[in-house]
Length: 598
Ligand SMILES: Nc1ncnc2c1ncn2[C@@H]1O[C@H](COP(=O)(O)OP(=O)(O)OP(=O)(O)O)[C@@H](O)[C@H]1O
Ligand SMILES: [Mg+2]
Image 1 (tube, helix red, strand yellow):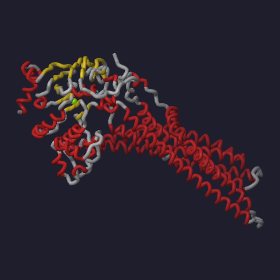
Image 2: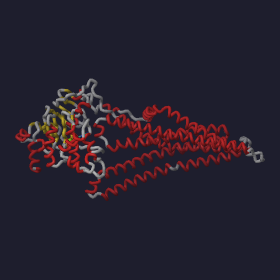
Image 3: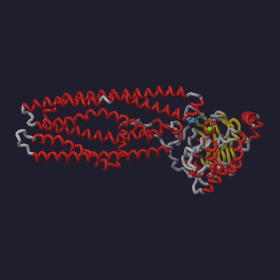
């Protein structure tokens, strides 16, 4: 039986397929607040391009003013020249304005999407992060959104102006000399065929290029983070040759893709020259036969034909850029499609004035449906009890904590706090009633003071110093040049794993939640320091319901109940003395440590 609130419920598997339409709808949603700006940009760009289309016409008129018989009106030509300058300046300004407008617009949109994705990430369940590489998520927020932004700023503009230019110059050519348009009957199908061929050819090459680059980056990340291991195992040579192979692959893929990609440049030139030659010859014949009245018309036509063929051939380029932008947008919106933690029950209560009585009965859970981790787990604890959970690595100890905090929901069985089922109270209030010190210490880039005060409200400098003294980390901190204001990620400060743990213990000491979870909280601290902070830990545990997970059994000897787990089952339960007297799993475990450690 699966409960309503289960984060792994079937909704995850019915995720909608991300299509172009879906991306367009989503982008549209972000574009809407900027609709007015977008329309302005659209018209500015339209006007800019339209103005530039006037240029050739004016040129043609100016040319026709030149009469070889000496009756040339120089003032008239001057006027045309002035108009030409004005037209091109106005067109330049409008194009500039619309392109900075679009770049501003794209930055605004990307900013919003980025904020939304980040906020959405915060709402996602722990399982999402447990099953993904952090680097992959980060690259969506940085690389993919940048790619999308670039494309919005540049390609959209490009498509917009190209469309206007193509249509506009075609119209102008038809107006100027309809007969010459026939030339394009030859060149356009050629261009179209070429574009089609190039897109087909280049797309997989570009995809391959990105993949190879991704592999290279992944490899670099892997090696950099594992530097010490590489050095310790003397694998530098092997790593370099593996790197070289990947590097060569990436460069090869790049070269091949580029060599096809850059064909479009020369090809554009070829098409342009071909149409120019055809227009010149054909135009001359038409002029001589009197079909086209003036040379100026031919000149205008040539200029329009140049404008016309350019964008047609460039569409191939834009198409491949669009392709990568679409892939990036898809990755970004896919994160938004991820289902957040299911909402709290409609009539979920706030967990208030918690006593700290915990009752777990017949818990059953697996991270995936096919692998049960916790089979049948039951437990009862009252305020002030210390419950120790021991067992071999992978027995499921941390999993119990995940269920207590509702990072995951159980498949069956219940957890009750003060008699209330934890699925019937709000997650926020449930989590607030626990303080945890986790197996993986987490400190952020901020000062030591900020790190210790994290999550607590209204704490003073004195409070922070008090808990750091109790956690036996104060003297270390005060020896640092900046003391409590030392920023933890500065190059100068590298604190040890154990010191990190002591800081997180100090952090926990500031909070006054009724329940406490210590998951291997002192595993990186030496035995002596551990004994030193024992008193502080006991103070910390005083009057709270505590769940303590420890491999070092000497630290949990005094627990009220010791639960021994093996493969997700509770195999033994009792006090230290009882379990030792029983001579079972626990006593064997204890003696094995006793022999080696003490
Ligand atoms: N997010 C996860 N998704 C799938 N399986 C997981 C996940 N986390 C843990 N497991 C599996 O669940 C089992 C129990 O893991 P758990 O972390 O509870 O062990 P543990 O008793 O805390 O071990 P340790 O003493 O090493 O911390 C392991 O076999 C582990 O592979
Ligand atoms: Mg664990």
